Each structure stands twice: as C-alpha cells, then as structure tokens.
Image 1 (cartoon, helix red, strand yellow):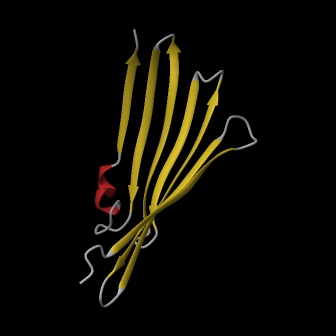
Image 2: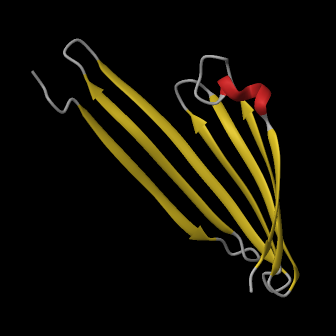
Length: 121
C-alpha cells in the first residue's frame, strides 16, 4: 500500500517586460497520482499580464487559467482606476468556457461582471 500516492508540483515565474510597465506571471500547477494500475497527471496553467498608466492611476490586468486535460478555461480582464485621492473603482469580468463536466465549463452560463468602489481614510 502506498499511503501518499501523489506528487504535487508548482513552477512559475514573474517577468517585467521591456515594454511600458508590463508584468507577466505564468504558473503551472500539477498533480501526479501514482495508482497501482496507472498514473494520472493533471495540470493547470495560470497566467497574468498587468500594466499601469498615468503614474499608476490606472491599472489593467488580464488573467486566465487553463486546464490542459479538459481544455477548459477562465478569463478575467480587470481595470482599476484611481478616481481621486484614496478613491478607487475596480471593474472586472469573469468568463468561463468548457464542456459541462469540466472544472470551468460547469460554470459556462455563469459569467459575471463585478464592480467595486474603494475609499480609504
């Protein structure tokens, strides 16, 4: 009997790109299940691209997650705007795609828009 029959891994990197204020982040998270009759592998890739403008008064991000085995994904574009000192407006949209029996595909009809206002004092 194998009591800990799986191995997990996480690899990734952040990189400032030479264009504007772009930051790229990519990660891969996986699981290797060691069964007595077979070996199963699952892998999820997550990435993000962020840029800021006007002395960081506006920040735009594009984040996404993709499952290699199921070929489904989630994409989240987001913008954060500094309206006035200590007041921020965040707007983001979450989009799901995939077959109905997959991690993200099960939510395909549940895309949503989120708006948030922050004030710090």
